[in-house]
Image 1 (tube, rainbow, N blue to C red):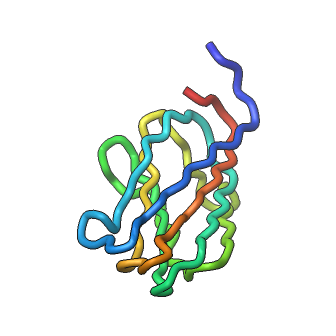
Image 2: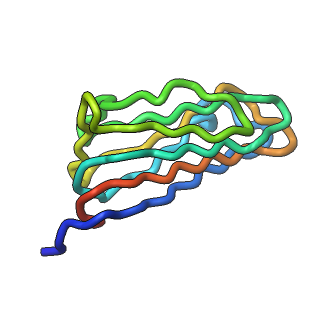
Length: 120
């Protein structure tokens, strides 16, 4: 068994020009076990100034955290553990939803998850 330790996991979502419908949502399976401490969200610039929203779902597709829509071309910090703990079971999904077509530049949203636990 792997020991618990402080870990960092980086997930990058890249949306192309013309994204619409289901193409406005991307997800990444997280095989992480432990407690989330912090998520740093980096929203790149995009031609059409679209927002990006991160959400975290459990293995039953229930939303356990909603980061709300955040403006483009900025960084955001989401803190956990102060009032409500978020525990990763090893079968969670991080989802990124953008508000519309990002335009010619496309759109890159990066989430860096800091947690204490096990990876994989």
